[in-house]
Image (cartoon, rainbow over all chains, first blue to last red; front, side, top):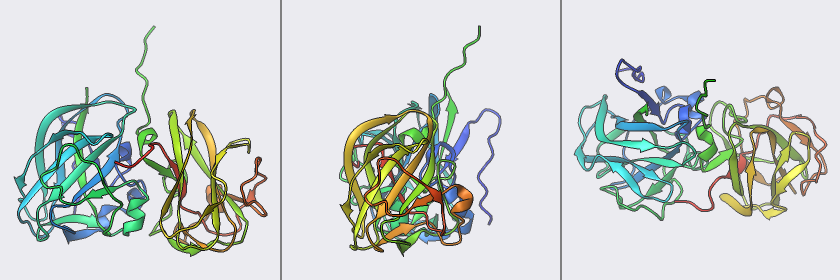
Length: 181
Length: 170
């Protein structure tokens, strides 16, 4: 299956991916390397959360988070958005990972995001059997992009602090669907 | 009269801005890796554009080993230094140095780094043309001078250095 980010459709917003540079979600350089060059990879550690920084250019409402599932699914997933202080603004809550080699969409409570503020989109799995589409960009290189990780973070805690630099060469495909408010 | 809402560049809030960022500096194809600094006491200057007011609260470099000292700074387009860390011991890690908070107005800047020896620092992929991206260099420039005197880059080596918009990690 070829992964192509869905195009905006009538009545829906844009989707901002960790694989692109729009809105600064994570890795600008990955826009060059591209997650299409990546592959399915099992989650690096049970209950680990990965956090990707981003901002928005104007007031936006986030209403969905999307994950590119890999060739195996297992256990449960939690996705969410944190502010710069580590306050959990919204999350899906523990949800069964479903749909191999497919996008899994998580509806979240509509959440208003403001320009000039730092946010993190977070993804956590409770096992190391489930797989997500990811690029192996090198742990250090991912850390240089401001990506953080947190152990024992399933379901996503509130607040979340005490993160550390990335310890695995694992940059997953996550998207936030949002619309101008 | 019609007023349009002002847009804010989302990058202005990202925690780690650096020479890695495409459109804002330099990004090479492939994986950055640790590599020997091309020449002792050489400074390397990387163009960097700020589109929205952006805070600088720390400077950082991606060290590759413990050899030598590294100085990281930011210069105005005219070559005058805004801020620098002074010589900081190299380490095989991300090394942050607190600086007095500075708000960079939109404009063109240089992100600068120099190394006292040929210690290792993470750098862009080798198959990347520094000169074609406007990267410059200066010899005998460690620590970083108050005013840079750049010449065009002679090697393909873009160090992974930059600044942080936040005072501490989450």
